[in-house]
Image: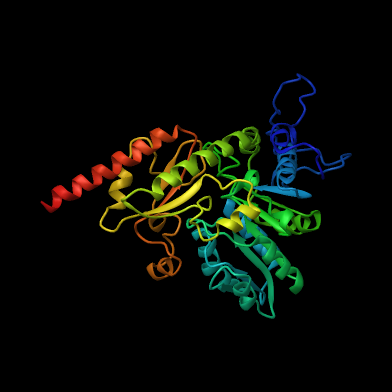
Length: 390
C-alpha cells in the first residue's frame, strides 16, 4: 500500500486504530485472544499475526520501509529465523556476508546443519565476493548494513542486481540504520528485517521483530510464521506503535550526537580507531553517503592496547554499560562478551572483533556530557593501571 505522506506523518498517523466509541487520541488495545469466526471477513487469532493491533502496526512499518506488507514478531531473531526458513529447505544454500550480528551467525552455524541447509560466508563485501560464494543450489543472499558491530557498509544495489540476475531472493537486517536512515527496498532488496527492540522501540522496554516485503513474499513468510508461533502480544504491539510515533525525532537527534562523538573519539589519543560511516576516514564513507539518508547513532571504537576495556565500562557514570542498543539513553558494551560471545576466539579474530572493541549506542543526551563521561572514565583507567604497576 502506497502512502503520499512523509516519514514523520507516517510515524505519527499511519497504522492508528480509530477509537470510534470514545474518540481517544491514541489507538485502543484489543487484548482478546478469542474472536468470532462465523460471519466475519477475517478469522482473527493472535498466533496468525492478525489481531487489530498486529494488523495496523504491520501496516505502519510496511509504509515506513516502502513495502507492500509486513509482520510483527516476538523478537528480531524470530523475524530472521522465520524468514530464512520460509525460503530455504533441505538441500538449499544461503550466502551471508562475513560481518553479521553474532546471533544470526550462531543461528546459521548451529541450526542449519541439523536441517540440511548449506551456507557460505563471504570473504569480503565486494560484489565479487558475493558472486564467488553463490552455488548452484543457492536460494538466498543475506546482508546487514551497517553491520554489527564494525559498521561495515554493503552495496545494496549491487547485491540486489546480482541476486536478480541469478534468480535469488535478498534479505537485509536494517536494524542499525532504521527506516529513517535507509530504505533497502528502494535499492532493490526484496525483504527487510528489523530487531524492533532497537530503534523502532527506542526506549529499552520492548522485545520485538519486524519483516517487510512484497505481498507475495509476506504471504510465504506468514505460512511459516503461524506454525512457529513467534507472534507478539497485543500490549507489546501497542507499546511499539506508540514508540514509533517519535522514531524520526529520536533517530535524527542520535544521528547528530553520533557524528559529534565519532569526531571526538577519532582525535582522542587513547583511542586506536573508530568505526563510523559518517567519518570521511571510514573506508565505505562514499557508499554510505550514497545509500543512507543519515549515518545513524551506532558506532564502535577500540581503546589503545594496554587500556582495560572492561574497567573503562565499569568506570562510566552516565553512559550505561548494558546489553542491547538504540534507546534514548547512551549505552556501551564489549561485543566479545555479548553480541559475539557465542563465536569462538578464532571466529571473532577473523572478522575483527577484538577484546578491546567497544560498541557505542549514542543516545539523545547532551554530547558535552557524554564526552565528559568518556574522558573521566579513561583517566580513571589510566590512573588505576598506573597505580597497579607502581
